[in-house]
Amino acid sequence: MSLNISQIQKNFEKLKQEVEKFSKDIRIVVVTKYVDNVEIVKKLADIGITEIGENYAQNLVYKYEYLKNNGSHKNFVWHFIGHLQKNKVKKVVPIVDLIQSLDSVELAQKIDAEAKKYNKVQKCLIELKVSEEETKYGITKDEMFKFVDNILSLNLTNIKLVGLMTMAPFFENPQQTRPYFKQAYEIFKFLQQKIVGFDILSMGMSNDYKIALEEGANMLRIGSLLFRG
Image (cartoon, one colour):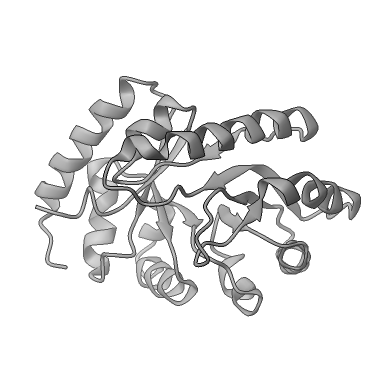
């Protein structure tokens, strides 16, 4: 994608103005999967972007290592936001501050074991599946409380559950996402009472972020909105 950093900056400033109508405390994770040119990723720091998210482990590693050559990897908080396969955990854990897609007990155990090697407590969001779509991952509402109890009972010391992530189905009319976000918020508030430090609700993307904000999101994952003319 051929992109002009000044256009991205305009898009980002406009987005920030919209978001700040809700709160100045909303975290915007900029999704860089559409950006093949790592020099553009590097310049994102110059326009005030501090958090970036990748969907694929190999792209995460490539961009991180490229930026590490001159130390500019330190300008960002790194997120992993895609489906995480267990065999890719060892690539992701050394790099990211937050894994947003914890969706099984086995994955939690694998992350915990890997984080231990780095003497790191890996922060994770539980991925909540609110959609019926077969292609979506995550823990369903019905399985969520048992899942959380299972994780907590294992006393994993190198993993910390810090919130919930969800993805509504895509609708042409974003208003249709509202019930999905409402449900996620209710589950989030319930889990907050069970888990200390459970304070991130990551929901809302380029097409539906305003509805997500209205329904209580405090972290957004925004990609295509920023990277178009």
